[in-house]
Length: 266
Ligand code: 5RP
Image 1: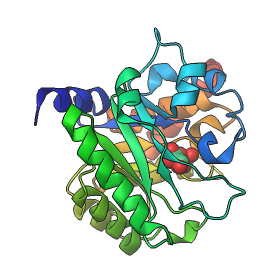
Image 2 (image 1 turned 90 degrees about the horizontal axis):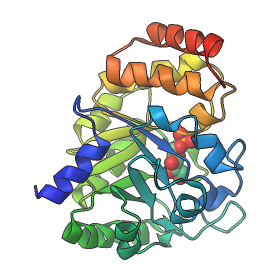
Image 3 (image 1 turned 180 degrees about the horizontal axis):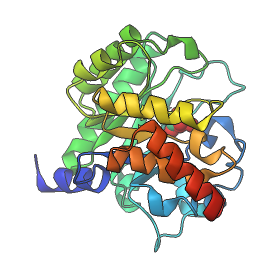
């Protein structure tokens, strides 16, 4: 692997082989998402605990202080909206030149396997990899499901992750599933990070699926709403950090959460 690629990947994946990515890119198709109406304010107290942030160029330029940033995973696919016809109809919205100008450590694009636009999104990914490899920029593929959250089961996720890796993604972001997640990771020859999905009811539930996902081979998370839509986002990210970087169990993470909740700021 060339120096530039290796260097960028090391900004994302830490020396322990683990990673905590914080995505705030949801507005690219959802608009001003709950508790992400002002992304700069949402992310500011969380930045010290994230290994990288994932966002679009618009929010990066407008809301993130370039002198106090974290490694950037630039979302470069889009072109759809919640009220449009088909969330899978994504194109590449941001050039690799722009990613370089913004000093991105990686770029990310969604693939929608099994959707009407499967082919287009897979070719988007392949073309992006072709261009990014020229400059040593890793591509993180996002195995997206659009509105069809029920698709999140092992056979489908394994298919998506493997295809993403075969097309050249250096990291793959996918959903966790209770049954067969080890097979999803085993079938993917590049590192896998877990996406959160919609906010779940309890903190322990989040800690349990992240912990289990890591035991089954994921290197960490790319987790947004379950952190910043929580009433205590700083406590959440501290607890997740303990699982990812300190091998805390879900119960230990809950203790970290409770302590941070009682002593820290929201
Ligand atoms: C949106 C994304 C998000 O980055 C991803 O879904 C992770 O965020 P969350 O944990 O809120 O699901 O790619 O398409």
